[in-house]
Length: 389
Ligand SMILES: [Fe+2]
Image (cartoon, rainbow, N blue to C red; front, side, top):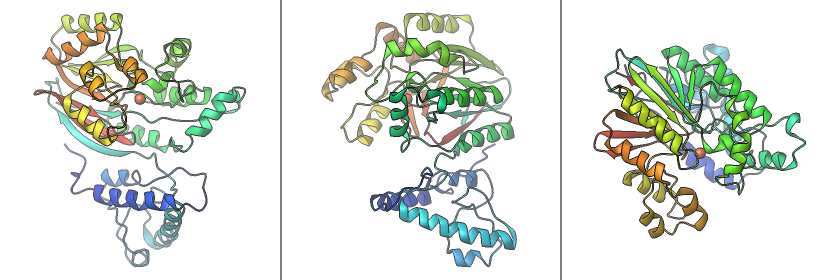
């Protein structure tokens, strides 16, 4: 079953157009609203229902009963009262366009794919990543640098926790579990960890750590191992599986979540991974935060970043890092250690590994790591629904 329309049938052209217009308007922003920006996400629910998204003339909407997804509030208004409500919401949405800010960015949209790996019976999981929840409360206010960090991130991170609700709801609808490839939180704060704990305990979630799970202050923090080790146990306690290394078997398919958040794994993780490979012949789906290097995803990231910034991958060949003039810091962070090199080789040569799901780059991209192994990178407001067969 594919619960979604194809991209051509869906709303991507509209989404792109709206984003282009709002980016332009953002340049002319007159005032700033405390709401988070929107554009893409409101389209999400439309994917998962028969409701259309159509920026048709608001006045004509007053005279039709055709249900349309409200880009302003993320709901569908029906009936005559609903038509009037929609009219005012369209006006509000138009105003948001003028000021360049929208409520609701951070709501999830869903895409769908199938993985034929030889499961005992078909099942679903929803892959998410990089939701970057970004909250503090009075308990964190004693740390001025943390307060400053949260303020600086306010524009970047979605404040709308309905995105997590969207995922939870979709998971319940499909009787799916959730695979989260990291960066659920943007930085370590008590409030963020509370939100993570609640999401992880109320839902069936299987997580691999992202770099932001361990980022205390974000800016200029880089891959700070010392800080990571200081907060690691506290962070881990907010997740229901070991985000450093975990195994979960679903209908004869083995999911392995590994923390490669700082572009590397360590010797212990490698040993555990090899043990899992040797233990049985179950098909494996790998959940990592940082994507594994492949030429196509390297090209995608470099082009996206205008060749102005390094790609964010695990196991980038050193000659490429030199050719593209990675800075000293980027080079040091991404240089693969021996365990990581061996791990990358194993990924490419182990037929048990059927798919990799990753995040980190906040973009949807399907990479061909080998002719038979695909790696699915998820956008930060995307829920990738996989039907595993
Ligand atoms: Fe990340």
